[in-house]
Length: 306
Image (cartoon, rainbow, N blue to C red):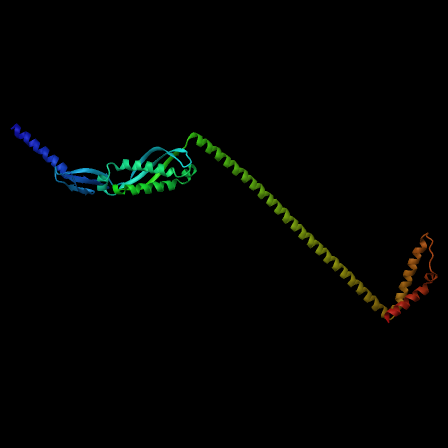
């Protein structure tokens, strides 16, 4: 009875083990490599699968997701013989589970080592200043080299990113001094540019002011000249009109007598002013004869009229 019980238990354990080895569930975005009697048989995709117990076995399990693998810090020497310490991250993905299983023993280790050697080679071709400016170009070169080498492994290298670049303390101090000097130079240049612009603006203002003043003075002189010309024109016109009226009045009946009377009055008045002064004056005899003076003026008027 005990032997039968033990046989039953052994049979049950065998059945459980057989079922466990027969039924396989592959998770999403995963792939299992199956070997049959030690030889590659097939690759199981995501889902439920049945295997032959004790004949088929899961030899390798791969994730088809993109993996981020840290690349250890390493010392690199630039083209100008400056040692820097660089670390980064590599992103890769298994695209062929069979090649990833049998193409190389450990594709993760191989990818990180190849990334380190490629990075040292790339940085050795550029100067220290370019390592910061051309970080993107360095990443691209590393990815190209890794992707070409990892193709037989069934692995696709997606990208590589430099995480950090550490410089020696002496280089950091020199760079800091250089940056400080550059900032001071830029400040001096900016100040000089500002002063130059200010002087230019002031000179432009003075120039514009001078031009405006000259234009205003020119317009003032033109206005004054026009005013004087108009004044002269008006005076001449008024004088001409006055003379024309006088001439018309003289030609009228009694005009000559009126002119003679007016001349006589003016003569007497002016001669009286001369008599009031204490100055001794010698005058021609004709000037004392009013009638003669008036007759002379009347004769002149007749001549003008003719």
